[in-house]
Image (cartoon, rainbow, N blue to C red; front, top):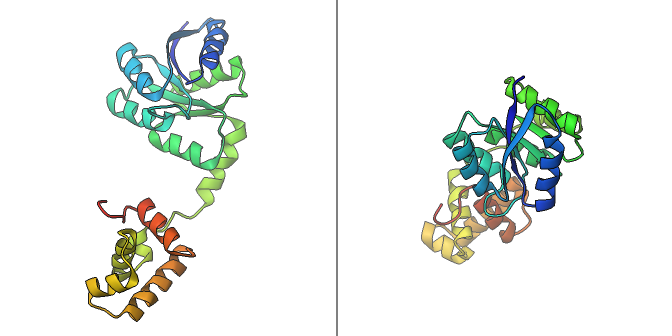
Length: 214
């Protein structure tokens, strides 16, 4: 019988201890360690080399997605199965893109977790039925349009200067165009990004790497 060596990562001590107790009752699962945050999980996984890290998403210092990403670089043979209370599209997709091989909610019981661990160990994938529809939703959504594909080069210039805190008059002087032209560019780019005002334009610039210094 192959024993699955598991490392637990959750910032709540009661959850870690509860999981260790439940998994410890299974004959083919061995809990080799427990971490209270993502950074500790990575260090322990690199040192202990478990088969699988059972990873929470919301943790201090380093969350589960970033920890999964670091593990893929530092210990690619260690698989990650997310075990979390979050089953929304964004959390799930971020985890899977970071390299997680499974995604379970904390409503899963011991046998469900064990079965998921075994599937992942066998190079499969394990998705809780409660989150499978999120995968389908994500696959049917069109990919987001990149900022440099959505906006003209001049609109990108104007957006960068807005994010830098310049007024329309200052932008006009910087780009050697009229203030009326600047206003036109601002109105066009706001319409394209679905923004109502300059604050939302600044937020868009930061999200898309168009802010000063990025």
